[in-house]
Image (tube, rainbow, N blue to C red; front, side, top):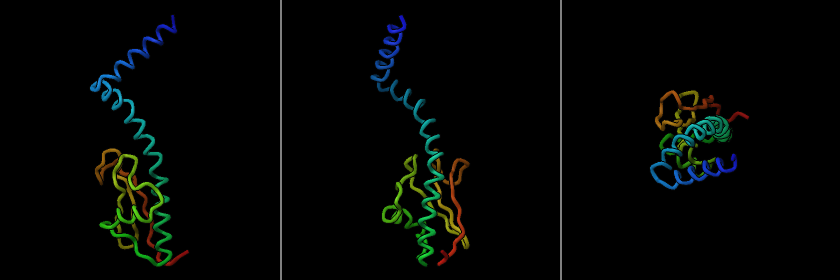
Length: 127
């Protein structure tokens, strides 16, 4: 009895996944929260590694990449992925004595509550 019931559930799920509109609804509900949770756990470590690489650049008395050229630095020099887990480009903000690298988070909009950032002091030539 349980085998038949399990087979029926698998069969119905297979049929539901075959219909494009149903498949999209199932995937959107099931995948997005898991993807967001995984991304939220990965991003702080990636930003920390990115900031470490930028600090090493500063230690060599190199300049930080400008916000306009940050995507170029990501392609050329960053050892991690060029995009965050939500397929958005990372960003950098440079202040007078610090810089911030960040991800726009799941909503893809910069400056909202779900952004994940790492801020470091600018220390040139130290290490």
